[in-house]
Length: 185
Image (cartoon, rainbow, N blue to C red; front, top):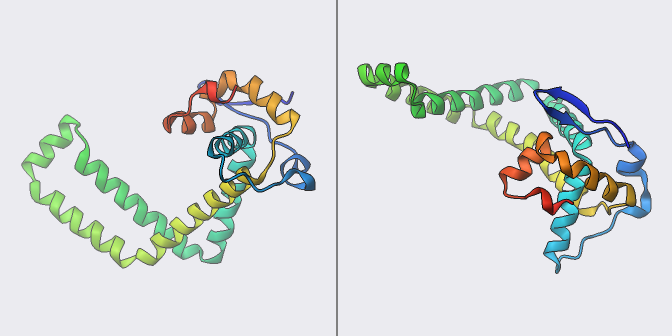
């Protein structure tokens, strides 16, 4: 079995699967049975776990390709998204020092919200461009995970890696959406 890579504080990144295993086995792709949603869900979830490192690199590659088409739009869109994120942190933070500042100067929150909202509306094209890049990569990943049939190596690796699933990025994401480890073993 391939070795996992430790990245930080007990987090692990499963091994990168070969290109032959990931894409080039021509007979290993098939449309799922749309009437059996449980079986289709099992296939998608198990492929997400098995190929998670490949999907991470593919997501980064797709976003970089989309960003290379209009790099300025991507930078402005990311800046607008960070402005939204910063505004949400400011508005919903419950830190004592920030609460005291918000009580003392309530008009700052209103002014900041108006400025952030205006900036986002002004740059909505760029924000949509960033969202397109992210959603395109998610769609490609979902299509691959839906069409890719599992092989014996995939099933065996899922059983072995299922024990340490909570320490991988995909394990954290799937646990957030309520999928338990028993689902993969």
